[in-house]
Image (cartoon, rainbow, N blue to C red; front, side, top):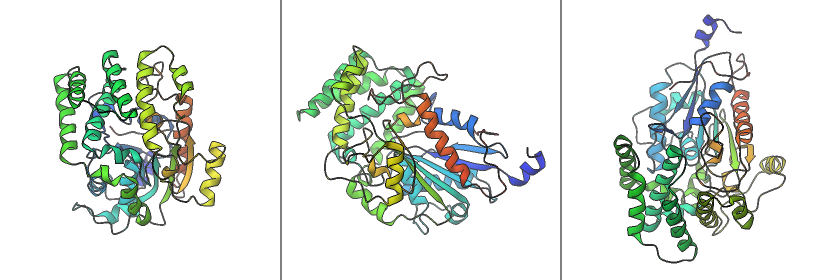
Length: 398
C-alpha cells in the first residue's frame, strides 16, 4: 500500500461525469448520477486519491456551449499538475466529451484547452447519440418541445417522490396515445399537467426547476444538433487525440408489445408509463437508419456482449443502439436510456433506485454493477505505469 508521502507525490486523478440532454447535476436531493457516484466511491482504485466531479452543463444549449462549460469545470478543479483526467459522458454528455477532445476546437470560453487535453487518458460515452436520434427531430417542433418539458419534469418528479400521481399518469398516457394515433394534443392540457406536477415540489425546489426550464426556453440549440443530420457532421470530424483511450457503452431496450403490457400487470403506473415508452421507442425506430459503419472489432465486441448485432431499429427508448458505438465497445447493456445510470426499479437498495418509465428491460442492480465495473476496468487499464489498478476509492469529492 502506498505511503502518505507517495500519495502526495502522485496527486489525485480526476473523473468527470457529464450529464446528458436536459440533464442536471443536482436539484436538491434529486441527483442525476447519484447511484453512479455511490458505486464509484466503493469500486475505484486504492493506490492514490481520486476525485469524482459531476459537471453542471446548460441543459439544452449547443454542444459548443456545453463543451466549454466542461472545459471550464476541469480547468477550475483539476489543478495545475499532470495528474490523469478521465471523462465519462451519458447521452449527449458523451458528445460534449467528444467535442472537447477535438484539438483546435473553437469553444466560447477563455479557458485554455491544451493543458487539459494533455492530461486526458480515457473518454467513455454511455448511451450517447453519436449519429443522432429521430427523437430529437420530433422534439424540435413546438408541440414536441412542450411534451419534452412535461416528460422531463415528470422524470424529476419520479426521482423525487417515487412515482407520479395516478391521475396525472393516466392523462399523460392518453396524451402519448393520441400522438401514437396521429391525433391532435390540447396544449392547455399539457400546461395543466405541468402545473400540477410542479405544485407538489417545495417552493425552493420549484424555483430551481423554473430556473432550469428557463434555461431550456432561452437556448435549445442542442435539439437540432442531436438530429441524425445534425450529429452527422460531428461524427465525421470529431477525432480524439491518439493518447486518449476512447470507449462506449451501448444500451438496447426490449421492444414494446404485448409481453411488456403483461409484465406491467395491473399496476396503473406501469401500464401508463409503458404506453409513453412505446411511443418514444417507435419514434426512435423511425426514419432512415442512423448507425454508421461498425469496424470489425466493434462488431465482434457487440456480438460477444449481446449475442449478435441488434437490428437497425433497436434502441433504448430514446437513442438507436448502433448509433451509440464509438471507439472500443465496453459493454452492451439490455437497458433503457436511464436504467444504465441507476434510474431503474429497486426500492430495496439504499438509497433506492427509482425507475423513470416501465420499459420491461429487466435491468437491475447486478446488471448496473456489471456495466460500471467494466467502465472502471476500462479507466484503470489506461492508468500510467506505476499506478495500481485495484478497485475502491480513496476519496470522492462532493
